[in-house]
Image 1 (cartoon, rainbow over the protein chains, first blue to last red):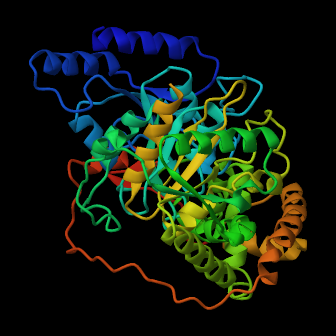
Image 2 (cartoon, each protein chain N blue to C red):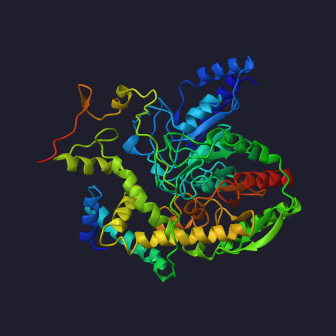
Length: 449
Length: 90
C-alpha cells in the first residue's frame, strides 16, 4: 500500500473514532505522505519512512498546536520542533497528529484533559490510563503505527499496560527533552509506545543520543535494533515480590505466566526484593510536586497562553492561572507548600532522602540480576469516574512505575498474552541497558506468537 | 490544613482560588499529607547523593530557525513587536 493511502485510511479511522485520542490533526499529512513516497520511490528514504506517528501533546511540533490538554495553552502554536520530532522527520517518519493526555501530564487515567477524557479501545467505559492516554489508545486502536509519550512517574507504561501495547521509558538522560513541556525536570523522559518490540527499538535508535539543547543527554547515539534478535539464555531476571503486594489476582497470574514464558526462552529466574516500594508513592509525589510547582510558574498569561486581566500585574497572573484544572492546581499548591521555608525540611528534604534510599535499593537489586520484573500496574483498566474524585486512590495507581523514574532507570511495559482486559508486565534494567529489556521483551513476543 | 494557610500558599503560588476551592483543597491536603507522613516512620539513612556531573556548554544563543515573529504570535497582547502587559502596581 502506498503511504498516502495508508495515511488516508488512518485519517478516516481517526475521524470515525469515538475514543477522543487526538487533540489536533496534521493538516499537511497528505502532502507529507507524498513527499516521503517520492523518497521511497527513489530509494532515498530514511529509516522511518512508512511509519505514521502520533505525538503526545506536550511535545513541540512546529506549526501545530501544543496544548498539554489545558485551557491555558488551548491556542498555543509551537514555533519550533522538539529534538525528538526533528529526528523523526529527518528519518522520514510522518506525524499524523497530537494526542490527548491528562492536563500537563497530571493524572494516571487520561481523565483530567480539558478536552475531555480519552476512552480505552478495549472497553469504552474504561480509562486508557495516563498520562499519555491518547498515545497508547491511538496505537492500540490502529489510528497510527507508533507514538511518542512522556513518562515522569509511569505516564508511558501505565497507559501501555491498560491498552495492551508496548511502552518504554528510557534511561534518564538518554533522550533529549528539548521541546518537551517539563513536568518534573529530574524525572521526565520521552519514549516510544508501539505495537511490537522491534518498532520501539527502531524509534529509540532514532531519538536517543546527545543533543546540545539538553545537557542531561551526553551519550552518543546508540543503535538498539540489534537487541531484539538477541538470545536471552542465561539472562538473570529478578522477580520482585513486593511488586505483587496488593495486586489483583488476575494480574498476578498473568505476570507469573509471563515470567514462565521468559524462563522457557532460557532466562534464569531469581528472587529479588525492593522493600521500599511501600514508600515509593509518597516519595515520588513529594519530589514531583516540588518540581512541578516550579515548572508551572512560567504559565503566567503574559507572553503566551490564556490571559484574564486583573487589577494589576500580579492579579493578572493569578487570574490567568484560573485556566488551570483542578488536579494541576492541587499539585502546584502542594508543591508550593512543601517547599516553603517553614515546611521544607519536614517534607521536601525527607522526600529527597527517601528518593536516594529507593534508588539505592533498586541498584542493589540490579547488581544481582540483569532485569527486575513484576506487574506494570496492580490492576487492569478501571472504569471512567471510578477514581477521579479520590486523589490518593489515583496516586496509588503509580505504586509500581515511579521507582524507575526516581532511580533514573529504563523500564518497559510488555503486553501479556491474556483474554479480556490487557495486562502489562514490567521490566527494569540498569541505566543504559535498554538493550536487555528489548531482548527479553522480544523473546516474550516470540514465545507467545 | 486551615483556610488561612491555604490562602497564604495560594498567594505564593499566584493562584486566585474561590472560597469553595479553598475549603475543598484544605480537606484534600489533610488526607494526602496524612497518607504521605508514612515517610516519617521510615528509617532513612543519610545516603550520599550522587550528583550528576555538571555538563556545561558555551553560552551561545541557538535559536535555530525560530523567528521572533513566530514566538510573538502566541502573545495574548502585543504592540509594535513587544509584549503588552498590565502595569506592575495599582
